[in-house]
Image 1: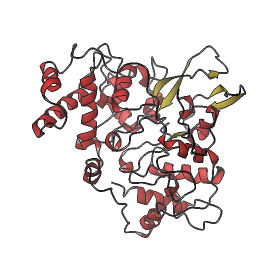
Image 2: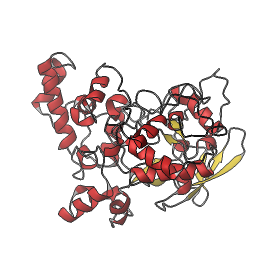
Image 3: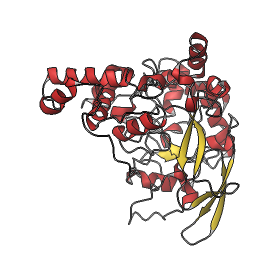
Length: 409
């Protein structure tokens, strides 16, 4: 099994990076909640009563759907739709036709940050600026201390309440931190969100039904039983279901694809490494599946120079190296017996997402390179043919995978 998968799995319990910028501004100053903020702060704590919970959710909905924080006109809902929790190229095209002044087409939604909508209408990606760690420089621009990357918008479907690794590179440790940075980076705010407002945005995303793909997932988030995988009714669906069986998959000896998806998509949310496979404990939820290597959208490619702790400089060429650029790497816990890898080891590693409701949340992967589930299956056929885990993933396997994924409500 790939040593990169092994180490990333063992690092699953490592603490995530928490940015140094303090969350929120001066409590109550210019709050969109007005007098409601004071009453919520003083009298209406979370879960104090049904009436209080409803009041807080109404406030959170307002903050998510309509509050701009004095910025460029964007709200959380601008990029996180009610229907999918994200937006697709088709959504972008329809919105551009309907209203060219839609705030989606501003700032980081534009091709170069100032003009052009070809990228967002073709791939639905936005520009994000990621600081470079001290031990990383750009070979062609050594004085530059950040890099601009094109990424999709992660869906909010089933994520806020059930998946605590946030963003494709897992850089955000909490929903409050994620909201704070999005308000700054994407909405270009002129008013700071208060700590209470950030808490209300978090609560809304964790409790409102729009953020769950089914009643079963919402019940699970509230302490109910874990959702069960559907068995499927057609032969194709049942073969696709077998790909998620909790059995050890050995590509050398396997004659069918049974258990192949379970290697990385195990656990109740289908986003954990399987304990039956020799790739570390459950909870390791980052991997390199060759998406950046393929670079289907044709994003700009950078050459990074990474200095290892021993002083050796390693060149990494990638359009987006993902986890490698985190200030604090998700290293294996001390005493785990797994070697502590250098930074370059994490090049092109990204979060393993949940698969519940996946048929509703296209496009897929961090660069939105897979526009359909069929594209996802085709990517894995290529990955299994050329990557470390070699297996003949047939066209029938691709069809079976898609048939089953469509059942994951």
